[in-house]
Image (cartoon, rainbow, N blue to C red; front, side, top):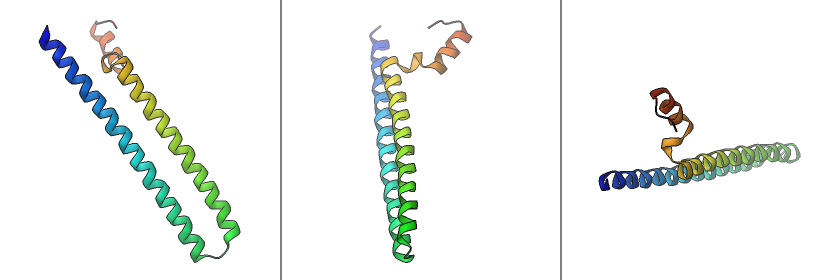
Length: 105
């Protein structure tokens, strides 16, 4: 019995590690995307002097990037919370397999 408990604790630690890694990766990607967008906008504004049009385009690009980033972060957080709270064995995918194999939730 103690062997099973220990294994389950190890699995939970691995899952938490995976969640942390995923969140860190998402944050890094978001920062990189924002920096790239800002650099591109600055370069375009410096090269082309039609500032009024470019400012509008830059604002639209920034809004789109922010919306995409927020959606990605929310989805990742929800998935992470579901995996941590519910546990991977009762995730929807595993529930499906359990039902097929005859093991109920």
